Image (tube, rainbow, N blue to C red; front, side, top):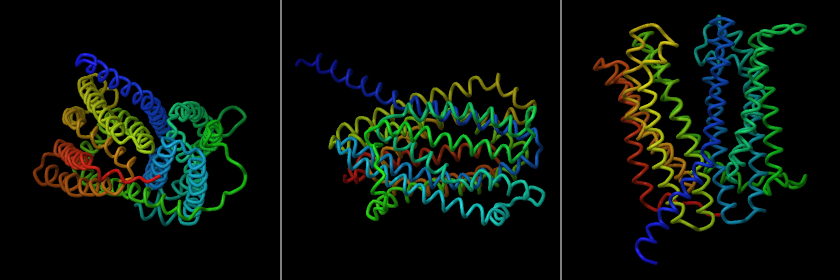
Length: 453
């Protein structure tokens, strides 16, 4: 083979990897997009009930983020372990892991459900729910979170499918249940002829119904795969596998929780900068979600492909998938960031007419366009390291970044130096770039490859 043929083969191999990565990532991006759109519609419907109801949903969703962090961490562990076994070709072992994942997720969901039902009021008070918000918040919180088993199972079933490389089934399920969610939201909140309005309880009930349906549809999709060919026997808890779940999922949960707690603190600082500044921050955050969707899709694809390659003993291929995913992420997220900023003067006016807010949003989006490169590296390499079983290092970097750079940076730049929202988004960028450097340095070593089949 001459040099020209070698270069052509290398380029062809790179293009094939890009196609494989995007084929997995795009359905995940679509799934996340559907979920976000329903969130916007849900908020819009609830806002028609009144500000008290909006506050009740808001404080409940803040608590649910903690639930999601735990369920997502379990999903990460399951995706990694399934991907490894699929790569190794060990279907019986993958099937056993899938059963244990479902069993473990069910127990965790039941425990969270009991905690919700018994301690709903004290938890909401601890979160700072005002007296006039508490009663409706308890109703909504108990409605959506007492059946937490369905939230947990949706996370785990989707993760198991992605571990096999099937990202289309979760996207299709997400599309159908989210369309149904919008219809049920309207009917159950406002009522129709012959059916009375249920208000905030109706909003919660709509969420529960679509989650139950989602679990059934994802279960059916999983049963079509080899790893889903379950029998009714041998559903006892595997203690050794449970330890492995905790070993992989515990740090992933710690990383998410560290992020959420840090956000609560620096959100409080932004709120003290003024109502307009906080509103501008919230709007900017909503507009930048498109970059995060793309990054999350690529990160999940990287976790699956790297995990399968490591399971097959192809370490070089795992690294190539990681590099290709990171490069795609850098290009795609930066392009999205520039586009969101470039079009901002057109679309911001549909959300607010306050000149002060508009100017602050544009400043934040301009800074965020530069932040996207760091965010892309952080999201993808976090997924890569987790695929290798190195879930502790991302937790350490997130804790350092969020607390030392982002939260402290928001105070120093935004509050102390008085840079306002510009200081906030610069601090966010510093956090992302610090973590991107640390994660990249870790990736360059072999210490992140800790998975043993």
